[in-house]
Image (cartoon, rainbow over all chains, first blue to last red):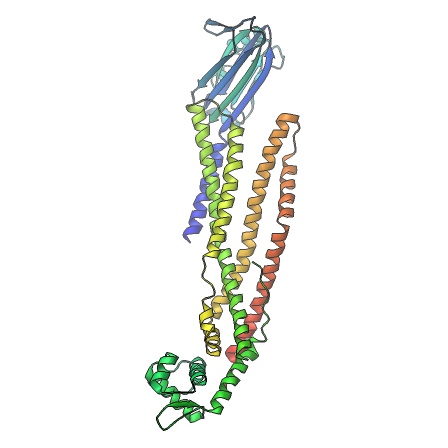
Length: 171
Length: 98
Length: 218
Protein backbone atom coordinates (compact mmCIF):
# COMPACT_ATOMS: atom_id res chain seq x y z
CA UNK A 1 0.00 0.00 0.00
CA UNK A 2 2.94 2.29 0.82
CA UNK A 3 4.32 1.58 -2.67
CA UNK A 4 1.03 2.66 -4.24
CA UNK A 5 1.27 5.97 -2.38
CA UNK A 6 4.88 6.32 -3.50
CA UNK A 7 3.77 5.71 -7.10
CA UNK A 8 1.10 8.37 -6.71
CA UNK A 9 3.55 10.87 -5.18
CA UNK A 10 6.16 10.26 -7.92
CA UNK A 11 3.50 10.69 -10.62
CA UNK A 12 2.40 14.00 -9.07
CA UNK A 13 6.05 15.14 -8.83
CA UNK A 14 6.63 14.26 -12.51
CA UNK A 15 3.49 16.15 -13.55
CA UNK A 16 4.69 19.18 -11.57
CA UNK A 17 8.21 18.90 -13.03
CA UNK A 18 6.88 18.66 -16.59
CA UNK A 19 4.70 21.71 -16.01
CA UNK A 20 7.71 23.58 -14.61
CA UNK A 21 9.92 22.42 -17.50
CA UNK A 22 7.40 23.83 -19.97
CA UNK A 23 8.14 27.26 -18.49
CA UNK A 24 11.62 27.19 -20.06
CA UNK A 25 11.99 28.61 -23.55
CA UNK A 26 14.81 29.09 -25.97
CA UNK A 27 15.36 31.21 -29.05
CA UNK A 28 18.25 31.54 -31.41
CA UNK A 29 19.25 33.51 -34.44
CA UNK A 30 22.21 33.23 -36.75
CA UNK A 31 22.93 35.58 -39.62
CA UNK A 32 25.46 37.53 -41.58
CA UNK A 33 25.20 41.31 -41.47
CA UNK A 34 26.80 44.15 -43.30
CA UNK A 35 26.19 47.86 -43.20
CA UNK A 36 24.03 48.95 -40.28
CA UNK A 37 21.91 46.35 -38.50
CA UNK A 38 20.12 46.09 -35.19
CA UNK A 39 20.40 43.30 -32.62
CA UNK A 40 17.28 42.85 -30.50
CA UNK A 41 16.75 40.73 -27.43
CA UNK A 42 13.18 40.90 -26.19
CA UNK A 43 10.92 39.21 -23.69
CA UNK A 44 7.55 39.54 -22.04
CA UNK A 45 8.19 41.22 -18.71
CA UNK A 46 7.14 38.24 -16.59
CA UNK A 47 9.97 36.20 -18.13
CA UNK A 48 13.61 36.07 -17.06
CA UNK A 49 16.05 35.77 -19.89
CA UNK A 50 19.71 35.21 -20.58
CA UNK A 51 21.18 35.78 -24.01
CA UNK A 52 24.64 35.30 -25.39
CA UNK A 53 25.53 37.24 -28.51
CA UNK A 54 28.54 36.00 -30.48
CA UNK A 55 29.95 38.41 -33.03
CA UNK A 56 32.49 36.95 -35.45
CA UNK A 57 34.21 39.44 -37.67
CA UNK A 58 34.30 38.64 -41.35
CA UNK A 59 37.59 40.51 -41.83
CA UNK A 60 39.88 41.16 -38.93
CA UNK A 61 41.16 44.22 -40.79
CA UNK A 62 37.70 45.79 -40.89
CA UNK A 63 36.57 46.69 -37.37
CA UNK A 64 32.91 46.57 -36.39
CA UNK A 65 31.18 49.26 -34.38
CA UNK A 66 28.57 48.55 -31.71
CA UNK A 67 26.30 51.50 -30.89
CA UNK A 68 24.18 51.28 -27.76
CA UNK A 69 20.95 53.27 -27.11
CA UNK A 70 22.68 55.51 -24.54
CA UNK A 71 25.20 56.58 -27.16
CA UNK A 72 28.08 54.41 -26.01
CA UNK A 73 30.10 53.04 -28.91
CA UNK A 74 32.49 50.11 -28.87
CA UNK A 75 34.80 49.32 -31.74
CA UNK A 76 35.66 45.66 -31.92
CA UNK A 77 38.58 44.29 -33.87
CA UNK A 78 38.29 40.67 -32.88
CA UNK A 79 35.52 38.15 -32.18
CA UNK A 80 33.33 39.46 -29.41
CA UNK A 81 30.85 37.85 -27.03
CA UNK A 82 28.19 39.67 -25.10
CA UNK A 83 26.37 37.93 -22.27
CA UNK A 84 23.31 39.63 -20.85
CA UNK A 85 20.58 38.85 -18.38
CA UNK A 86 17.17 40.46 -18.46
CA UNK A 87 15.43 39.91 -15.12
CA UNK A 88 11.74 39.44 -14.54
CA UNK A 89 10.18 42.90 -14.41
CA UNK A 90 6.47 42.35 -14.04
CA UNK A 91 3.55 39.98 -13.75
CA UNK A 92 1.19 38.37 -16.21
CA UNK A 93 -1.58 40.94 -16.43
CA UNK A 94 -4.81 41.70 -18.28
CA UNK A 95 -5.59 40.36 -21.69
CA UNK A 96 -2.02 39.07 -22.01
CA UNK A 97 -2.98 36.09 -20.00
CA UNK A 98 -5.17 34.88 -22.86
CA UNK A 99 -2.11 33.65 -24.72
CA UNK A 100 -2.76 35.71 -27.82
CA UNK A 101 0.34 36.11 -29.95
CA UNK A 102 1.86 39.53 -29.87
CA UNK A 103 3.58 40.61 -33.03
CA UNK A 104 5.21 44.02 -32.98
CA UNK A 105 6.19 45.09 -36.43
CA UNK A 106 7.18 48.43 -37.88
CA UNK A 107 4.75 50.31 -40.10
CA UNK A 108 7.01 49.88 -43.09
CA UNK A 109 5.83 46.32 -43.35
CA UNK A 110 9.17 44.77 -44.10
CA UNK A 111 8.21 41.76 -41.98
CA UNK A 112 10.87 42.40 -39.39
CA UNK A 113 9.30 42.07 -35.99
CA UNK A 114 9.61 41.10 -32.39
CA UNK A 115 7.47 38.03 -32.07
CA UNK A 116 6.35 37.50 -28.50
CA UNK A 117 3.48 35.52 -27.08
CA UNK A 118 2.72 33.43 -24.03
CA UNK A 119 3.85 30.42 -26.00
CA UNK A 120 6.99 32.24 -27.09
CA UNK A 121 7.76 34.77 -24.35
CA UNK A 122 11.36 35.41 -25.39
CA UNK A 123 12.76 36.39 -28.75
CA UNK A 124 16.05 37.30 -30.39
CA UNK A 125 16.27 39.11 -33.72
CA UNK A 126 18.74 40.71 -36.04
CA UNK A 127 17.08 43.49 -37.98
CA UNK A 128 18.72 44.52 -41.21
CA UNK A 129 16.83 47.80 -41.56
CA UNK A 130 17.01 49.40 -38.13
CA UNK A 131 16.44 52.81 -39.59
CA UNK A 132 12.81 51.93 -40.23
CA UNK A 133 12.43 49.73 -37.19
CA UNK A 134 13.96 51.82 -34.41
CA UNK A 135 11.88 55.01 -34.82
CA UNK A 136 8.80 52.85 -34.68
CA UNK A 137 10.05 51.19 -31.50
CA UNK A 138 10.81 54.60 -29.94
CA UNK A 139 7.48 56.12 -30.99
CA UNK A 140 5.65 53.59 -28.89
CA UNK A 141 2.61 53.56 -31.15
CA UNK A 142 1.10 50.81 -29.07
CA UNK A 143 2.09 51.79 -25.52
CA UNK A 144 0.10 48.93 -23.98
CA UNK A 145 2.43 46.53 -25.75
CA UNK A 146 5.59 48.16 -24.51
CA UNK A 147 4.32 48.17 -20.93
CA UNK A 148 4.46 44.42 -21.06
CA UNK A 149 7.72 43.75 -22.84
CA UNK A 150 11.41 44.46 -22.24
CA UNK A 151 13.66 45.09 -25.21
CA UNK A 152 17.45 45.28 -25.19
CA UNK A 153 19.04 46.42 -28.41
CA UNK A 154 22.10 47.88 -30.05
CA UNK A 155 23.15 48.75 -33.57
CA UNK A 156 26.05 47.11 -35.30
CA UNK A 157 27.97 48.64 -38.16
CA UNK A 158 30.24 46.54 -40.35
CA UNK A 159 30.49 43.00 -41.66
CA UNK A 160 30.09 40.19 -39.18
CA UNK A 161 28.43 36.87 -38.44
CA UNK A 162 26.09 37.14 -35.51
CA UNK A 163 24.89 34.21 -33.49
CA UNK A 164 22.45 34.78 -30.64
CA UNK A 165 21.38 32.12 -28.13
CA UNK A 166 18.50 33.17 -25.93
CA UNK A 167 17.23 31.18 -23.04
CA UNK A 168 14.54 32.05 -20.55
CA UNK A 169 11.95 31.06 -18.02
CA UNK A 170 8.44 32.45 -17.91
CA UNK A 171 6.35 31.90 -14.81
CA UNK B 1 -7.43 -35.12 10.28
CA UNK B 2 -5.15 -34.40 13.27
CA UNK B 3 -5.56 -36.50 16.33
CA UNK B 4 -6.24 -35.05 19.76
CA UNK B 5 -3.74 -36.75 22.05
CA UNK B 6 -6.27 -36.90 24.89
CA UNK B 7 -8.72 -39.09 22.99
CA UNK B 8 -8.47 -42.43 21.21
CA UNK B 9 -7.80 -42.23 17.49
CA UNK B 10 -10.89 -42.41 15.29
CA UNK B 11 -9.36 -41.17 12.03
CA UNK B 12 -5.57 -41.24 11.82
CA UNK B 13 -3.34 -38.63 10.25
CA UNK B 14 -2.13 -40.43 7.12
CA UNK B 15 1.25 -38.70 7.33
CA UNK B 16 1.87 -39.98 10.87
CA UNK B 17 0.67 -43.43 9.92
CA UNK B 18 2.95 -43.51 6.89
CA UNK B 19 5.94 -42.35 8.92
CA UNK B 20 5.49 -45.06 11.53
CA UNK B 21 5.14 -47.76 8.88
CA UNK B 22 8.07 -46.39 6.90
CA UNK B 23 10.38 -46.48 9.94
CA UNK B 24 9.23 -49.98 10.79
CA UNK B 25 9.77 -51.08 7.19
CA UNK B 26 13.33 -49.76 7.27
CA UNK B 27 14.28 -50.90 10.79
CA UNK B 28 12.26 -54.17 11.06
CA UNK B 29 11.51 -53.93 14.79
CA UNK B 30 11.91 -51.21 17.40
CA UNK B 31 10.97 -50.50 20.96
CA UNK B 32 8.43 -47.74 21.50
CA UNK B 33 10.92 -45.16 22.77
CA UNK B 34 13.25 -45.56 19.80
CA UNK B 35 10.24 -45.55 17.45
CA UNK B 36 8.98 -42.29 19.02
CA UNK B 37 12.41 -40.73 18.50
CA UNK B 38 12.72 -42.03 14.92
CA UNK B 39 9.28 -40.79 13.89
CA UNK B 40 9.57 -37.55 15.82
CA UNK B 41 6.32 -38.20 17.63
CA UNK B 42 5.50 -37.57 21.28
CA UNK B 43 5.51 -40.86 23.15
CA UNK B 44 1.82 -40.59 24.24
CA UNK B 45 0.72 -39.86 20.71
CA UNK B 46 2.80 -42.73 19.34
CA UNK B 47 1.22 -45.13 21.82
CA UNK B 48 -2.26 -44.11 20.72
CA UNK B 49 -1.31 -44.68 17.08
CA UNK B 50 0.29 -48.03 17.90
CA UNK B 51 -2.87 -49.10 19.71
CA UNK B 52 -4.98 -48.15 16.71
CA UNK B 53 -2.61 -49.83 14.25
CA UNK B 54 -2.53 -52.94 16.39
CA UNK B 55 -6.33 -53.24 16.33
CA UNK B 56 -6.22 -52.90 12.53
CA UNK B 57 -3.56 -55.61 12.33
CA UNK B 58 -0.85 -53.38 10.83
CA UNK B 59 1.63 -54.06 13.64
CA UNK B 60 2.21 -56.55 16.42
CA UNK B 61 4.28 -56.58 19.59
CA UNK B 62 6.81 -59.29 20.36
CA UNK B 63 7.48 -60.76 23.78
CA UNK B 64 9.92 -57.94 24.60
CA UNK B 65 7.27 -55.35 23.78
CA UNK B 66 9.06 -54.34 20.57
CA UNK B 67 6.96 -53.25 17.60
CA UNK B 68 6.94 -55.29 14.35
CA UNK B 69 5.30 -54.45 11.04
CA UNK B 70 2.87 -57.09 9.73
CA UNK B 71 2.40 -58.06 6.10
CA UNK B 72 -0.92 -56.23 6.16
CA UNK B 73 0.85 -53.14 7.49
CA UNK B 74 3.39 -53.25 4.64
CA UNK B 75 0.57 -53.76 2.11
CA UNK B 76 -1.31 -50.81 3.59
CA UNK B 77 1.75 -48.62 3.10
CA UNK B 78 1.98 -49.72 -0.55
CA UNK B 79 -1.74 -49.07 -0.97
CA UNK B 80 -1.25 -45.61 0.51
CA UNK B 81 1.57 -44.82 -1.93
CA UNK B 82 -0.54 -46.19 -4.76
CA UNK B 83 -3.53 -44.14 -3.61
CA UNK B 84 -1.56 -40.86 -3.58
CA UNK B 85 0.06 -41.68 -6.90
CA UNK B 86 -3.39 -42.33 -8.39
CA UNK B 87 -4.26 -38.65 -7.84
CA UNK B 88 -0.89 -36.95 -8.26
CA UNK B 89 -0.10 -39.07 -11.30
CA UNK B 90 -3.10 -37.69 -13.16
CA UNK B 91 -1.95 -34.11 -12.85
CA UNK B 92 -0.16 -32.94 -15.99
CA UNK B 93 2.24 -30.14 -15.13
CA UNK B 94 3.10 -27.57 -17.75
CA UNK B 95 6.78 -27.01 -18.45
CA UNK B 96 7.73 -23.48 -17.45
CA UNK B 97 10.55 -21.61 -19.06
CA UNK B 98 12.61 -19.16 -16.99
CA UNK C 1 6.46 -47.08 -6.80
CA UNK C 2 7.65 -44.86 -3.98
CA UNK C 3 10.31 -43.41 -6.28
CA UNK C 4 7.63 -42.65 -8.86
CA UNK C 5 5.60 -40.88 -6.19
CA UNK C 6 8.61 -38.83 -5.06
CA UNK C 7 9.39 -37.89 -8.64
CA UNK C 8 5.79 -36.83 -9.33
CA UNK C 9 5.56 -34.82 -6.12
CA UNK C 10 8.93 -33.21 -6.93
CA UNK C 11 7.42 -32.18 -10.27
CA UNK C 12 4.40 -30.85 -8.37
CA UNK C 13 6.49 -28.82 -5.94
CA UNK C 14 8.73 -27.49 -8.72
CA UNK C 15 5.64 -26.14 -10.46
CA UNK C 16 4.58 -24.47 -7.21
CA UNK C 17 8.07 -22.97 -6.82
CA UNK C 18 7.72 -21.59 -10.31
CA UNK C 19 4.42 -19.99 -9.29
CA UNK C 20 6.28 -18.45 -6.34
CA UNK C 21 8.87 -17.03 -8.75
CA UNK C 22 6.19 -15.71 -11.09
CA UNK C 23 4.36 -14.15 -8.17
CA UNK C 24 7.56 -12.39 -7.14
CA UNK C 25 8.08 -11.24 -10.71
CA UNK C 26 4.53 -9.89 -10.76
CA UNK C 27 5.01 -8.22 -7.38
CA UNK C 28 8.23 -6.67 -8.68
CA UNK C 29 6.23 -4.77 -11.28
CA UNK C 30 5.56 -2.04 -8.70
CA UNK C 31 9.29 -1.82 -7.92
CA UNK C 32 10.06 -1.72 -11.64
CA UNK C 33 7.66 1.18 -12.23
CA UNK C 34 8.88 2.94 -9.05
CA UNK C 35 12.51 2.77 -10.19
CA UNK C 36 11.61 4.05 -13.66
CA UNK C 37 9.52 6.89 -12.21
CA UNK C 38 12.38 7.63 -9.79
CA UNK C 39 14.73 7.84 -12.77
CA UNK C 40 12.35 10.22 -14.55
CA UNK C 41 12.11 12.40 -11.42
CA UNK C 42 15.93 12.41 -11.09
CA UNK C 43 16.43 13.23 -14.77
CA UNK C 44 13.88 16.03 -14.67
CA UNK C 45 15.32 17.39 -11.39
CA UNK C 46 18.84 17.48 -12.81
CA UNK C 47 17.49 19.00 -16.00
CA UNK C 48 15.58 21.72 -14.13
CA UNK C 49 18.62 22.43 -11.93
CA UNK C 50 20.85 22.82 -14.99
CA UNK C 51 18.26 25.01 -16.70
CA UNK C 52 17.89 27.24 -13.62
CA UNK C 53 21.62 27.50 -13.02
CA UNK C 54 22.22 28.21 -16.72
CA UNK C 55 19.68 31.00 -16.56
CA UNK C 56 20.45 32.63 -13.23
CA UNK C 57 24.10 31.76 -12.55
CA UNK C 58 26.08 30.65 -15.51
CA UNK C 59 26.24 30.76 -19.22
CA UNK C 60 23.84 29.23 -21.64
CA UNK C 61 24.66 25.53 -21.89
CA UNK C 62 22.16 24.39 -24.46
CA UNK C 63 18.79 23.04 -23.50
CA UNK C 64 18.62 20.28 -26.09
CA UNK C 65 22.18 19.06 -25.45
CA UNK C 66 21.54 18.79 -21.71
CA UNK C 67 18.22 17.01 -22.17
CA UNK C 68 19.62 14.64 -24.78
CA UNK C 69 22.62 13.74 -22.61
CA UNK C 70 20.33 13.03 -19.67
CA UNK C 71 18.11 10.78 -21.75
CA UNK C 72 21.12 8.94 -23.17
CA UNK C 73 22.77 8.35 -19.77
CA UNK C 74 20.08 8.33 -17.09
CA UNK C 75 17.26 6.41 -18.71
CA UNK C 76 19.27 3.34 -19.76
CA UNK C 77 20.82 3.37 -16.28
CA UNK C 78 17.35 3.44 -14.72
CA UNK C 79 16.09 0.64 -16.95
CA UNK C 80 19.18 -1.50 -16.19
CA UNK C 81 18.78 -0.92 -12.43
CA UNK C 82 15.07 -1.77 -12.62
CA UNK C 83 15.64 -4.98 -14.60
CA UNK C 84 18.48 -6.07 -12.30
CA UNK C 85 16.43 -5.31 -9.21
CA UNK C 86 13.60 -7.51 -10.50
CA UNK C 87 16.10 -10.29 -11.26
CA UNK C 88 17.69 -9.90 -7.83
CA UNK C 89 14.29 -10.21 -6.15
CA UNK C 90 13.48 -13.35 -8.11
CA UNK C 91 16.87 -14.88 -7.35
CA UNK C 92 16.60 -14.08 -3.66
CA UNK C 93 13.42 -16.06 -3.08
CA UNK C 94 13.94 -19.38 -1.35
CA UNK C 95 12.77 -22.38 -3.31
CA UNK C 96 13.28 -26.12 -3.06
CA UNK C 97 12.85 -26.21 0.73
CA UNK C 98 10.63 -29.24 0.17
CA UNK C 99 13.56 -31.37 -1.06
CA UNK C 100 14.60 -32.54 2.42
CA UNK C 101 11.03 -33.45 3.27
CA UNK C 102 10.71 -35.40 0.03
CA UNK C 103 13.81 -37.43 0.95
CA UNK C 104 11.66 -39.05 3.64
CA UNK C 105 9.81 -40.83 0.81
CA UNK C 106 6.07 -41.35 0.75
CA UNK C 107 5.40 -39.81 4.20
CA UNK C 108 7.25 -36.67 3.19
CA UNK C 109 5.36 -36.52 -0.12
CA UNK C 110 2.09 -36.96 1.73
CA UNK C 111 2.92 -34.24 4.24
CA UNK C 112 3.90 -31.83 1.49
CA UNK C 113 0.61 -32.43 -0.29
CA UNK C 114 -1.38 -32.14 2.92
CA UNK C 115 0.26 -28.86 3.87
CA UNK C 116 -0.35 -27.06 0.60
CA UNK C 117 -2.35 -23.87 1.17
CA UNK C 118 -4.60 -24.27 -1.82
CA UNK C 119 -6.44 -20.95 -1.59
CA UNK C 120 -3.13 -19.13 -1.38
CA UNK C 121 -1.73 -21.09 -4.36
CA UNK C 122 -4.77 -20.33 -6.52
CA UNK C 123 -4.64 -16.69 -5.54
CA UNK C 124 -0.88 -16.57 -6.31
CA UNK C 125 -1.45 -18.04 -9.78
CA UNK C 126 -4.17 -15.49 -10.57
CA UNK C 127 -1.96 -12.69 -9.21
CA UNK C 128 1.03 -13.94 -11.22
CA UNK C 129 -1.07 -13.98 -14.39
CA UNK C 130 -2.30 -10.42 -13.89
CA UNK C 131 1.16 -9.30 -12.79
CA UNK C 132 2.72 -10.83 -15.89
CA UNK C 133 0.33 -8.93 -18.08
CA UNK C 134 0.89 -5.58 -16.32
CA UNK C 135 4.65 -6.11 -16.02
CA UNK C 136 4.93 -6.79 -19.74
CA UNK C 137 2.84 -3.71 -20.55
CA UNK C 138 4.96 -1.56 -18.19
CA UNK C 139 8.19 -2.93 -19.66
CA UNK C 140 7.03 -2.42 -23.25
CA UNK C 141 5.90 1.14 -22.44
CA UNK C 142 9.24 1.99 -20.83
CA UNK C 143 11.18 0.55 -23.80
CA UNK C 144 8.86 2.43 -26.16
CA UNK C 145 9.44 5.76 -24.39
CA UNK C 146 13.19 5.10 -24.38
CA UNK C 147 13.23 4.12 -28.08
CA UNK C 148 11.13 7.17 -28.93
CA UNK C 149 13.50 9.42 -26.96
CA UNK C 150 16.49 7.96 -28.82
CA UNK C 151 14.71 8.46 -32.13
CA UNK C 152 13.91 12.06 -31.19
CA UNK C 153 17.59 12.65 -30.46
CA UNK C 154 18.46 11.04 -33.79
CA UNK C 155 15.76 13.16 -35.42
CA UNK C 156 17.36 16.26 -33.88
CA UNK C 157 20.72 15.31 -35.38
CA UNK C 158 19.16 14.65 -38.80
CA UNK C 159 17.34 17.96 -38.54
CA UNK C 160 20.49 19.93 -37.70
CA UNK C 161 22.68 18.21 -40.29
CA UNK C 162 20.34 17.50 -43.21
CA UNK C 163 17.59 20.01 -42.38
CA UNK C 164 14.98 17.28 -42.69
CA UNK C 165 12.19 16.92 -40.18
CA UNK C 166 10.50 13.63 -39.40
CA UNK C 167 6.89 13.76 -38.25
CA UNK C 168 6.50 13.10 -34.49
CA UNK C 169 3.69 10.62 -35.09
CA UNK C 170 5.97 8.69 -37.44
CA UNK C 171 8.75 8.71 -34.81
CA UNK C 172 6.35 7.33 -32.16
CA UNK C 173 4.98 4.68 -34.52
CA UNK C 174 8.42 3.61 -35.73
CA UNK C 175 9.72 3.32 -32.15
CA UNK C 176 6.66 1.26 -31.16
CA UNK C 177 7.17 -1.09 -34.10
CA UNK C 178 10.90 -1.41 -33.29
CA UNK C 179 10.15 -2.21 -29.63
CA UNK C 180 7.44 -4.74 -30.53
CA UNK C 181 9.70 -6.48 -33.03
CA UNK C 182 12.64 -6.58 -30.60
CA UNK C 183 10.52 -7.87 -27.71
CA UNK C 184 8.57 -10.30 -29.88
CA UNK C 185 10.19 -13.36 -28.30
CA UNK C 186 9.76 -11.99 -24.80
CA UNK C 187 6.09 -11.16 -25.42
CA UNK C 188 5.51 -14.59 -26.93
CA UNK C 189 7.20 -16.24 -23.93
CA UNK C 190 5.07 -14.29 -21.45
CA UNK C 191 1.89 -15.11 -23.37
CA UNK C 192 2.90 -18.76 -23.38
CA UNK C 193 3.64 -18.64 -19.64
CA UNK C 194 0.25 -17.10 -18.94
CA UNK C 195 -1.37 -19.96 -20.85
CA UNK C 196 0.66 -22.48 -18.85
CA UNK C 197 -0.34 -20.81 -15.60
CA UNK C 198 -3.98 -21.21 -16.67
CA UNK C 199 -3.30 -24.85 -17.40
CA UNK C 200 -1.62 -25.31 -14.00
CA UNK C 201 -4.53 -23.59 -12.26
CA UNK C 202 -7.06 -26.00 -13.79
CA UNK C 203 -4.92 -29.06 -13.04
CA UNK C 204 -4.39 -28.00 -9.42
CA UNK C 205 -8.08 -27.20 -8.98
CA UNK C 206 -8.94 -30.66 -10.19
CA UNK C 207 -6.34 -32.26 -7.91
CA UNK C 208 -7.40 -30.22 -4.88
CA UNK C 209 -11.04 -31.10 -5.31
CA UNK C 210 -10.31 -34.80 -5.92
CA UNK C 211 -7.68 -35.15 -3.20
CA UNK C 212 -9.74 -33.33 -0.57
CA UNK C 213 -12.79 -35.46 -1.33
CA UNK C 214 -10.81 -38.71 -1.40
CA UNK C 215 -10.78 -41.00 1.59
CA UNK C 216 -8.09 -43.57 2.20
CA UNK C 217 -9.47 -46.58 3.94
CA UNK C 218 -6.69 -47.91 6.11
